[in-house]
Each structure stands twice: as structure tokens, then as C-alpha cells.
Image 1 (tube, rainbow, N blue to C red):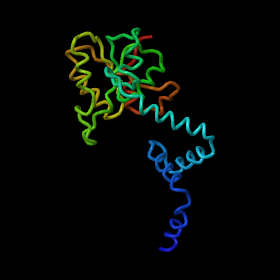
Image 2: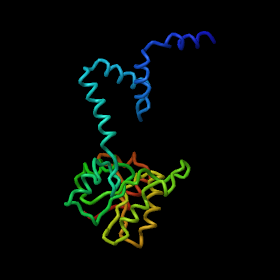
Image 3: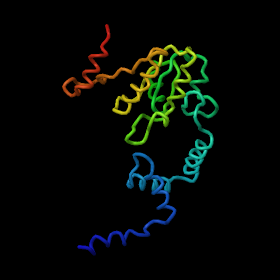
Image 4: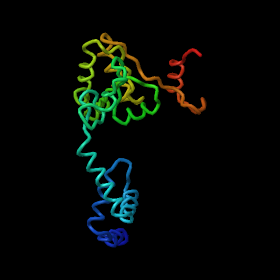
Length: 210
């Protein structure tokens, strides 16, 4: 039995060229990409034209060279300010606090929000070593300091870490400005019988007039 388990490893060793193995390994490091998916992507790139492969490589290189963080809200930006902070039509008195830049994209898709953002860079998680000083909470408090901000909307994720982050920030902003929390409840198209107690409770607490 010992020989049977060792044989496949010897057979597979050196099947791909080192450069192919390296590409598979690098792709497998991406979130949500396992070994098999990395292999499929690698084979796809090998079959693609040189122009397609080089376009992907150039796009990765360009985004790493040109994209940084907005100096005001810490969203992704190609210059000192992101496109949202640079837009004079946005309401500077309203700040929506999110965990990551991807959350900004999700909220912008709704076309319902016209204020500014503040990206924390994560959520509080002492067990993982993420404390307040590791997030951009101090920068948020500084933005609210002059009194021009009339409302801070906390849109952290409805998880244990997201809720703890929202509570921590709310406690420090309560006497400075209005603090609101993004409502959570039943999804459109969902059935009551499949909703958990927490979701139903929040849906009840967030009910509104019709």
C-alpha cells in the first residue's frame, strides 16, 4: 500500500514545464481559485493568442503601477482623489462607511446613494489581530471633526465582525453627528419560512410606513 500511494506523485512529477507550474501556482494563490481552476486558466492562456495573453499581463501591470488609495476616503483611485470624492455633485455632508472598495461598487450599483464614502480596510477582529488602529477609524473621526458631516451611515457587513465594527464606530460618533445603520432584512423573492430569526427580527425592527 505504501508503494501505491507514492507512485502517482512520481508519475506526475515534471509533467509540466517549470514556467507552466509557476503560472499554475501563482493563479492558485488568488482567492477562490483552487488548483484545478488554476490549471484550467493556465491552459486557456496557453491556447490564447499572444495579443490576448499580453493584454492581460499589461492590464495587471498597469493597475499595480497606477492604482492607489484615495487620500480622503481610501477608495481605489488613480490620482489623489477617487472619482466619487472628485465629483462635486456628491453630498459631502453624508458619509457611508464600508469595509472594502468592493462594497462601494455594490452600493453604487443601486443608484440610490449620492453621498461620499469612507473605506475602513476591513473589520475589527481581535482574534485575527485586527484592532482599531489597523483600520482607518481615526481618519473617519477626523473627517467628522469640523461638524460639516451631518450623517454617517454605517454599511459594514452584517457579520459578527461587521456588527462589532459598526458598534465601535457608532459609540465614538454618537455625540458628533447623526449615526445610522444600513437596514437588513428579508431579501426580495425570499420566503418567510426559510428566513432565520435574526433576519426576521431585523426586518421587523426596520419596518416602515407604506
